[in-house]
Structures are given as C-alpha cells and as structure tokens.
Image 1 (cartoon, helix red, strand yellow):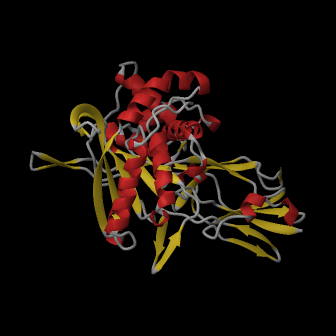
Image 2 (cartoon, rainbow, N blue to C red; image 1 turned 45 degrees about the vertical axis):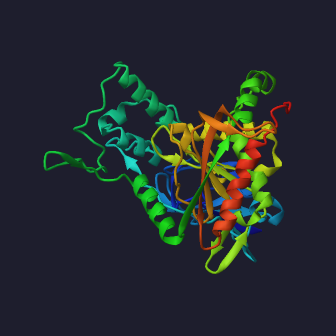
Length: 429
C-alpha cells in the first residue's frame, strides 16, 4: 500500500494561494485516476483538482472556504501501488518537483502571487476571490451580493452571474450598486483637498504593481521599434475571412499571424527564448507564446499557446480564439496560463500606435503590436520610387539588456517585421 499526498497545484503565474470552494469527495470515498476531487479558486481562475491516483481518501486536512498555500498537503490518498499514479503527475518538469518516497508519492507544483482571503456574507454564503474582486471594483454592496441568485455549485455566485447582474443594473431592471455600502474588506474612498480622491488599490492591482516594479528592478529594460508594411496581411485576411469562417468555423484575426511570425523569428534567434536564473541563462526548447488578454473586470490575464511553432494558421486560430474566449469567461485551466517563454501584447486593440511594455518575468522580451493604419509610404520598384497608400504598423520590443544586447534585440524585431511584410498574399487556406 502507498500513501499519496494530495498537493495544491500551481494555479498560474503570480498565484501563491487558493481557496477551497468545494470538496466533491469525503474521507473514505474511493477515487479514480484523474477524477475530480475538489474545486478551488483564485483571483484569476476557478479550477477543478483531479486525483493523481486511484485509491481511497483516508484524510482531508483542509476545510471548504479555507485559503491554502500552493504546494500545501490538503489530503491523503491510499493506493495499492505506484501503478495507480497519474503519469502526468510523475513526469513533470524540473520546475515542478516530484518526490517519490518509500511510504508514498508526493506530487507538487510550484507557484507565484496571492489572493484575497475569502469573503463570507452574514448568511455564511461563500464568494470566490474573483467574484469578490469584481464586486469591489463595481462597488456592489454585501446586501446586493447576497441577493444575487447563483448558478454555480450549491448556488454559488459565478463571474457570469455577477456580470449579468451588472448588465441588468445598467439597463434599469434592478437597483444600481449602492456606493454607500461597500464590501466589508474594501476601504472607502476619501476626499482630499476638494479636488482629489484617494482610492486604495485592490489586492489584484497591488499584485500587478508589485510584479511590474519587480520586473523593472530585475531587468534593465531597452526598447526598439520598427515600422512594418502590413498591406499583404490585411488584404489576405480580408480576402479569406468569410471562407475561413465557413470552412473552419473560426474567425481569422491578426493574432495568429503575429504569433506565426514571432515563432519563425525565435527559431532564427533562439537566444530571445530564454530566462535568467542568477548567472545562469536557461534556453527554452519549447516556444510557448503568451498573449495578454484584457478581462471584463479590467484585470489582465496571459493565456499561453504551448509549442506554438508546431501549429499552422488554422491551428493557431482555433487555439487563440478558444483561449481568449475562455479567458474572458474565467474558464481557463491553471496550466493554460503558465510556462510562457515569450509574450505578445496588442496595444493596437486600444487604438495606440505603439508602447513600451514591461517584461513578463522570468522571460527576457515582450513584443507590443500597434494599431494598423493607412499611411502614404514610399514604394521602391525597378522603374523608380512611388508613393502609395499602405497599411502600416509599429512593432515595439522591450528586452532584458542583461542577456539580450541591442544587436540581438534589433535583429530579432526586424526579422519579425520581415516575415510579416513577406507574408504570402496568395496562400490558400
């Protein structure tokens, strides 16, 4: 017989704690390999935790609504042998330590930032950290929160329930949020000298602020820029978008095209796809592209397209659309927001020409994509130069000057631009 320690798994970048929402099994229950045992929540993701083995739950150590640290043992499972243990759990990477001991198997996955403590109403109703965060931002009172009918497990209020409530409030179907009755854990805004207001950051904003300051303190940031002629890409997309949707039931956006160009450039300049550990440079073999995605709550999440270089435009479109949609609906799995090796952020979606983004540690570079706009440009031809209206865009690369010199950063960015400009306008789908 072997005893397995059930560990709180890694829940994504910058998450140090999680809240136990619901135990779906109790002590003495049998569980199958990969069967869901409990539900947990963080500020970013609600997730189900599967069993790493087939066996019997002999002891549950943490209660529902308890905030637990990533890597903490929360239950014990007794199994007849190691053959019942999930191969996925045992074959984790070096960053996901696994201990196999004589008395059992311990699986653990490392972590990142923390979440707010759980929120309970006077009726002892549970609210996940994500719901709590949105309610705080929207100034929804505790009384109003208690009135919302939940569609989640055991009547739990989900993000979708809260957003529906806010939409109904805006349309006048229900009373608007009461600014005089904020959630207990939020500090009220304070007037200052009649012309200013002091507002305490919520916990998620504090985490973002800390992460950004840490990144700037860790990496000497350098930025470079190129202007790219996107005419071929724009005309091709316009030509195939209806056929693409009909044939693959997917919208073709510019994002998969950007990712494809970045993957090609990373293969040409693999030392962009690295991280730093002290004086060690860790070159990543896989090319995992993170794409910054804005959430309805105003926060940001970065889903990761794993081994993106192995996908064609059709595959990239499907993955990008799926991750973006589930990201906005808070349905991403923990492993879908971690292990990125390079990040893309589209500031052009907000109408910005360009930007100088902060590196997503421990990566060493991040690409900002500006808006695509029509401009007069000089076109060179064998018969002479001419001025024509072209679809132009600015790319910006922020990189860590500890390991990426100006030559490497500049050449890499130029190569990304070259791949976009040389996009085959006649390629089929």
